[in-house]
Image (cartoon, rainbow, N blue to C red; front, side, top):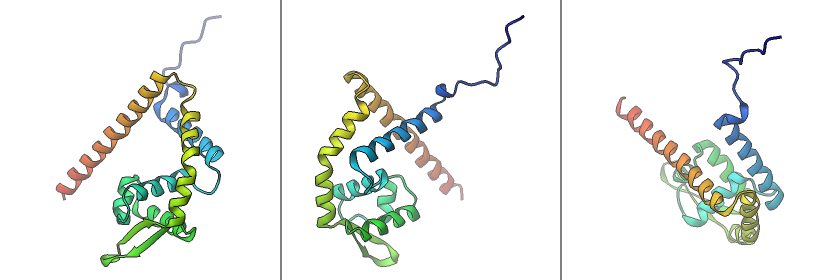
Length: 160
């Protein structure tokens, strides 16, 4: 019996960057829930941290900084406001300025030890030099794709 020829259309799923990124995101989200609990999602945490770093920014700028669309950011901001963690102030032209409340600041401060534990758990399977390289490559991947997206948007805008 002759060995079958390899299927030219067959691809190793675990050699596909998209699949690996999706699995890495699933793992990261699971670890986030295990360490930080169910009260805040990774995206909510990103918004809260950005507001901590840039208090009083407008909602559209916040959306760009955390890589979300405006309507999703508005929905999440409304949820965070209902939890008492942020304050939304209406500005001219239907914009909103966002800032953390004292409760939001306290919640983030209480999360600090857990965030350190989360980072440790996420990276613990890698050697220290691999951890540095892994984070460097992830940053590079995101930055290059963000820059390409900005370039595409500028090209599309100038072509109108």
